Image 1 (cartoon, rainbow, N blue to C red):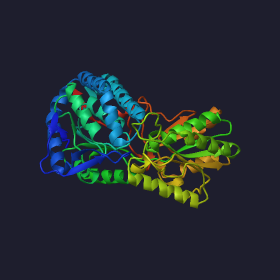
Image 2 (image 1 turned 180 degrees about the vertical axis):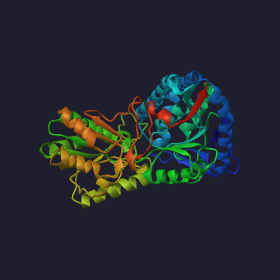
Image 3 (image 1 turned 90 degrees about the vertical axis):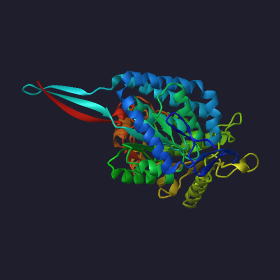
Image 4 (image 1 turned 30 degrees about the vertical axis):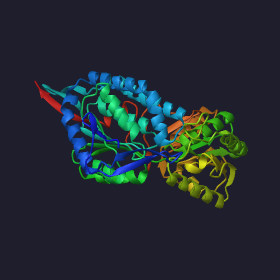
Length: 477
């Protein structure tokens, strides 16, 4: 059994129950980890607390250099880490390598920002009085990371937390713990001080709940579902913990008749089916103006039919299995509801049979056209390879449909009219809008959702504010 990583070393937890991790494509056992529980969280928070004073006192530039060494080491271990990520998550090896590359990019982004952490000064508060605003680290940060992008979503939290002087206790999803545990050991092999970055595997209900409730944790950074995010916010309120919550999404993509339709179709297909559609920022609803709607729906369906479905380890695989049986069941139910409401399946629609599909949680990339606007595929978060496409009268209707969702994470608009594009970007209720662009998140820009999609910002310089607190100081001369 792989152990927790606490205080710079692999740490056995006596009496902990075992969690079995299986490959989503084959159901073969990848390994086991402990349900760390309260005992593991107590030990990790104690180690992080002990390390905090020294790490906080380390100059920001030196913290940045330490993080740079971590990023370099992760990059050097890509050939080891990518198969590990594919085995536990299911994604194709090519996507695992892309994910690790993005993880390294994000950490290096915060290396650069480590030289830009500063407060402010006010020279003339009063006669003989000057003011300063100090920016101070919070303390121990709890980072709770989901299974769909275990390394990049960890980097989103680890980077700003460490360069601002905090220490971290990370809890990966119980189904994808191994790559995170290995990242922690690589980080300390690269010179990160003991206790600065700790990893405790376990379930959300037991280990995650213990981390959120622990009085020694000053902030929780969480990526996951909206219902769990609400529970975390409520629990965090007991100790007035800071929170950053990156939650669910049902991202719309709007295509106007004057757009580069072929480019929009490609962006929609890639944005929907990358990582088997299991991304908060995946394209989940497409609204096309009536004159091009049939062309859009069929164009996306044609691309979906060409995708190579298979094991993540197989050469040429473009889309792997869903991560869990529960995830596939949800997709099947949403598709059944869409068809019952009048939707037409243009591509996919089935669970493939035969080897290797009988052993894993596979589902064909699926496009459904014209389902009811009240159907599950329109109003729920669709976390898998299922895309709904609808015809709308014009841009105004498309924006109204887009905003009808309780979510507000990402959105896309395709048009050759810049005035229309900017108007749509202003009116769509989402934290991120791409105009004539694929759905790539940039480290330079703040990222975070509106409405039921979360609270706070990751990425960008803005993320630093969510890992620090401001303190005012008055100096009378």
